[in-house]
Length: 232
Image (cartoon, rainbow, N blue to C red):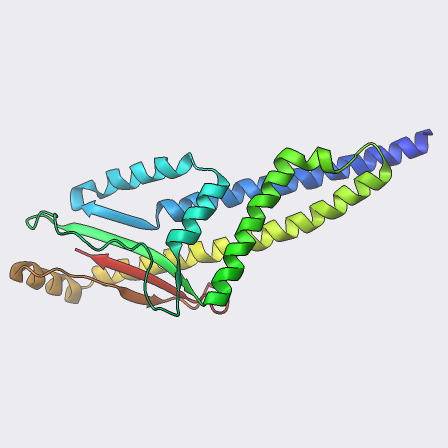
């Protein structure tokens, strides 16, 4: 190999390194965003326990790997619009102390069955891609020759596009959840709700959901409903 060929190979290898770093960094950003969504998706407990419960849940999520996070996302955060029900939404507070305010809120993303299947399959492929990048990349591509570097660069370009698509989807879900939380917070702060809550508490009634919040601003088509159930 002459000096010109060697220089060209080094240039291609550096390009591979830069593109690999870009993919890995985006995957880490994706994991962090996923942890934030899952950690804040559901909150329950007595009023004076909510913050401690939130911190505990955050610590639990921080230790999970991408595959575990995606498994929890698809099993708990998604809901099929066909049956109009929420999956894994706990509503049994029969043992709650009636003298204390017990709060339970959860968020779910509702989508049609076809979109649900496509989304869950795409997320599984993302886990496979992540494992391929982290554990098997050098086995697959021979970076000591020009053709191997070219193949690796093309692969990494496609990989980044896939990661970026999932990142944008996840970011839209997070924005929708924050929008729903803000809307519910505004509702809870109104004098009408507080009067209703006081009357219900005086009568010994339980306020329960679900309260449906339509959030068409952020989610992709056919994934436009953010459901939030709450009870106190």
